[in-house]
Length: 125
Image 1: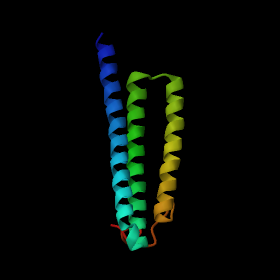
Image 2: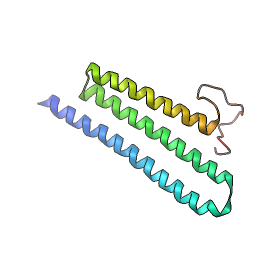
Image 3: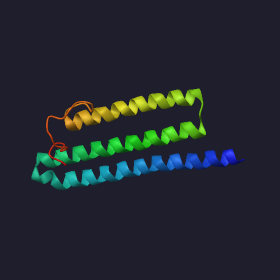
Image 4: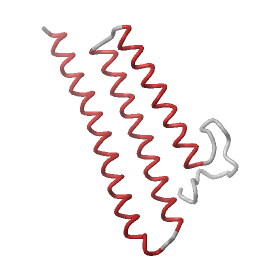
């Protein structure tokens, strides 16, 4: 009985983490769209880059939350070989997506050294 309760609690925790990721992504995305529409008249390309980087960073963070939820769920709720293989595939896909977001926003792969000495990305600290 205790094992079932633990699995149920962990499942709710994993769903909570996933919901947090979705809400976080949606809120920042809506904020970026509204900000872009407000700045549309100014025709300032730096604002576009700012919102693009903001969305990419929130997507990266959201992907990390989703991976964490999947790991928790697989390890505690469904520790089967099939679930572990699916988890591995999901982690690979989400890692690739994260890397492409870094490439899109920073112009380099995550493992490449930055040309600049600062941590600034497209003019954004």
